[in-house]
Image (cartoon, rainbow, N blue to C red):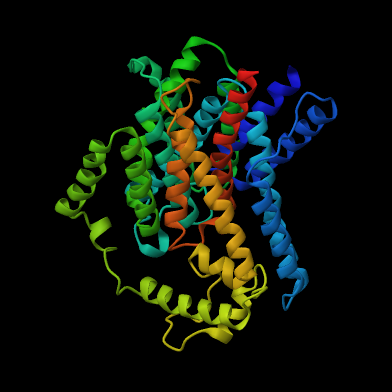
Length: 440
């Protein structure tokens, strides 16, 4: 059982660090792959076919074909390496098929999301990260990545509160988020005093080890602390998404929370509606300054989407090639566009079509439709055993949030958001595997 626990520990470390360090998360993924390889070789783990295999295989093959026909094949193939991240889906679907594992790993995800969001809030209110060009980004390299991850964690935690087991909320069970928030505050204080990157790196290491320890621990105090996490995560992540000033994250969060409300009880639609109404009524500056379609960002998106359509019409089969939008954009840029270059087209659908051609877009839509269908099917059974079936609601609502936000941002180009999405995608398939094994 040591290898199985090690595999769970690496998955927990990955979930905890998605929000704070892509290097740490990818390192945990590599270690999880190695551990799973040993388990497979010894016959103690097996990978099963899923309904996502065909669209994922087709999408990967077409991506590589697109890279081969790009103007710079070497660079395009190098950009295609993110396809390797899809291994996470298969590892998680197999490794989280045992009772209780899914809820534990999501607790680790909540820890990381809480750390990210707490630092974003501190940066906004105390460290002057309030301008549009210096928005709070937490531990990550860009505010778009930070807001996208905080959005996904918010929706998943809301699903836990709406569908998870009802437990008494006790003040003493808040020791875990209290320790985490104290650690984040210390990191922010040290960095503001010019301490460099060492405090942040130490915090990431402690979070990775702590996330694994919290998941593997069996004691009642730790179990109660895991169950209490969502109560802290929802308000802190919600505030972080708000002060991120990132409209695609606002829209994705609103849609994801609406899905949770509808699945729980349609009459609860008043909750997200009331929250939106309160924001519009109070008109906080952080929101009202972004409620416009005439700012430079919105205008630039309009013209880059026009350029993206031109790219697609010019090369509809294989596209420009993965990672080639930055190079190709100046040739297709409309004169009215405010910015001369752009690394991507701020829209998942248009980005994939312009980069990799219409067939790649078809394969991606196929993959997304199957993933959403599987999650919705399991979400409708969220009140049935096993006790952590609420994770299917987290999966469906989280994927809705990511895909809706992706209509205005190429968020799947962020490894952090992609890994979060793949982890959420795996949960319904892990539930199915457990149910099938129980039925034997």
